[in-house]
Length: 141
Image (cartoon, rainbow, N blue to C red; front, side, top):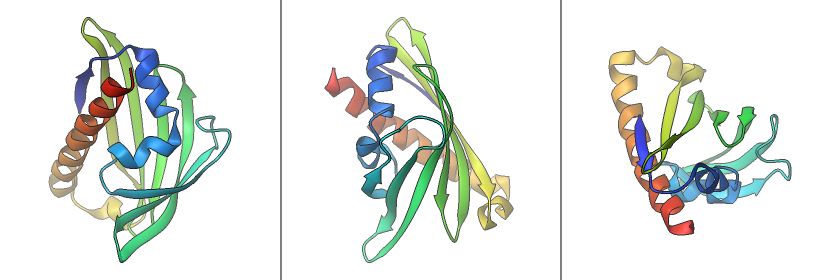
């Protein structure tokens, strides 16, 4: 899933590197409980809640790879459903920055949902996440 964000790669990276902003754009994220001081260094974690009250789940997202301002690869956990690997890729674009999200289930029961069902759900989620992300990044300039 891709979207052009009308902001420079550094401005877009500023949003990705501020862990406290994730509930503003990640679909399903309800609140941020804590952000490791090292975020977004590999191994650093976001401590978040997912869902709608009263059915929220507290869990974490950790950084697998970080290459500022080009790439951020995460492992997002939402147990008991499982975990997903999510990669944000940033590329310069004549109108700003092209942001790509690649996501798929990597651990737990969610891996066993057939791709025919899983992929359209992730596409919808990531399309909305990118819409929200652009809104945040374009207004922080």
